Image: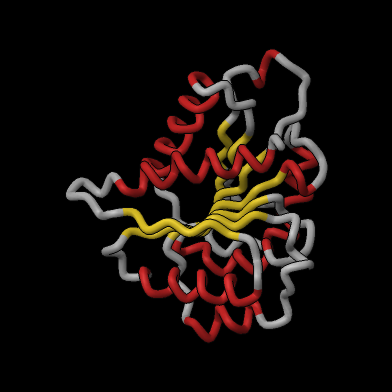
Length: 197
């Protein structure tokens, strides 16, 4: 972890308790404003919807999750086990989907606008069976106007053909681009519903 910068969102109570928390790892190219928006949505869900507190760990692009996750879970007060670990990716972190296809690595994985070619998706899913990942929920989302709209449809089709449980949302693009915020809210609710089951 030398010379690496990680951004972590802690719930307000973190400094006043000794409890362990579920975690959502966010990969891709989240800008500071993206991270702030996700943290604000998280605070709102915790504060107003009685969602149990959790941590958000924002990782830089091209991070090796199999190396960083054990390190983070040793440094932070994170509940042990895949049932309390989720993954959220955007177009720049789409390749991280492969980590979620490893059995019992994550309890859920959300993918927004993956920048992957159909051949890459097919190769990633070639040897994956529905039984192997039956304990991981997948949530896919895109707007109807993004450049990766077709890729998301291809991923949905591949998962459906393999019988892998997932939910798929196409959000209507708005002038102010608010679809991402709406998708993030839905994503966090989906993730936390699975994590706190």
